Amino acid sequence: MTVSAQDRARKIKIILFDVDGVLTDGTIWIYPMPVAMPDGTVVSKMVEAKGFCAHDGAAMTLARLGGMKLGVITKRISETVALRMRDLKIEFVYQGEAFKMRPVREIMEQEGVTLDEIAYVGDDVVDLPVMRQCGFAVATANARAQVKAEAHYVTPNAGGYGAGRDAIEFILEAKGLLEQCIEASIDASNPLPAAMDIGKGGDLK
Image 1 (cartoon, helix red, strand yellow):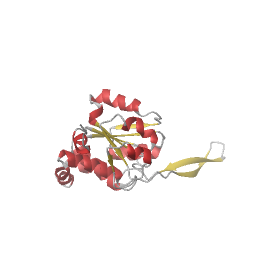
Image 2 (cartoon, rainbow, N blue to C red):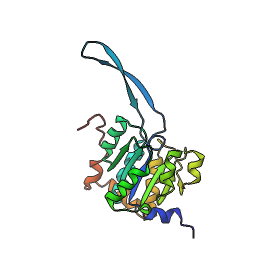
Image 3 (tube, rainbow, N blue to C red):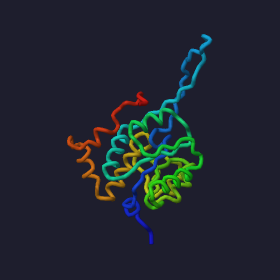
Image 4 (cartoon, rainbow, N blue to C red):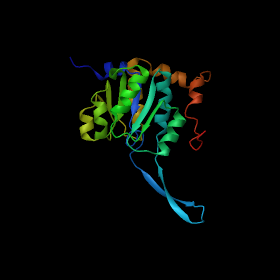
């Protein structure tokens, strides 16, 4: 019997995301930055920048209000990603991971969850090993055709333009929690929304 995307989404306890092309539009900006050395010479240090969608950040708050935990698994290593994930207080941050099932298994052991309780949002073939095994596989609108073909759900919006929010709202809707979480996110007496995504992207403390 075929299991619907909604039935899969209802079981989810942890949502994991790729970064480039999922939480961003996939563009990677590399800037040279002059750095003064102790001997007085100046060398160029390469700085990587990415753009994140604020709608996705707000959705992370909704997911947390819905009782879920969040994580990112990415092949690249970027301080920009580390900073943004600190802003959002993301529980699981794995960078430099070419084989993404390794951190997934680590998260499963740490949290005591099964693959059926994990959702993964991806856009490229490096994401397929996790998408093929997790309970709810999501492809972004800009994902490669091979990735869309194996997804349980394809977001209406592209990565960097609300795909993360699409995935979270789909899961919350399937659980019957979306409207409740939206109301909780705008409730001034609820301390959680005010504590998340407070925009201190340049503050490492």
